[in-house]
Length: 193
Image 1 (cartoon, rainbow, N blue to C red):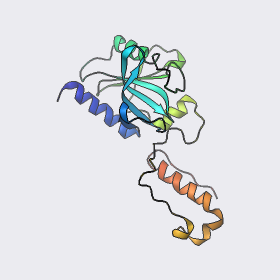
Image 2 (cartoon, rainbow, N blue to C red):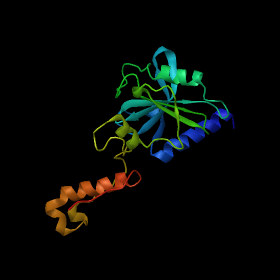
Image 3 (cartoon, rainbow, N blue to C red):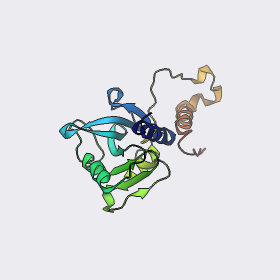
């Protein structure tokens, strides 16, 4: 296995562990949320190693280098250039993209372009999509939750066995149950009566 392939596997694993869905650009749909698109097409026949999307809108870029390659200023400039090269058809939260990541599979560096700092911060793990949505100030409670394809989903109604006592509060119960399932790997859920 080539060093670049090793680095990509490590980066994919960091993304997956944090709750991002990693897809190639041919399988991307704007209906997806919390997705990292590999080889995202940019202006000028450029390709970003990864474009990050929340609620179908671009929010960040990851520049990947092969294992052992230092994450220098040149790598940072390349990633920052990509953040400004979005195609017109990409929806985005901000243009240029506010969040830049650099990684060689072992190291992971992060910069929020909105605050004007020059230095990248070292991270132990990738931001979760919900964390990145909060950092961006996206106020939608469901922003950053993983894409849930309706294909193969099973639904229950009160008559199917949730219980007779919930009939009048069916929608509240259904939303709570759905939210618990979606949040299970993201954060804790607090119920109120």
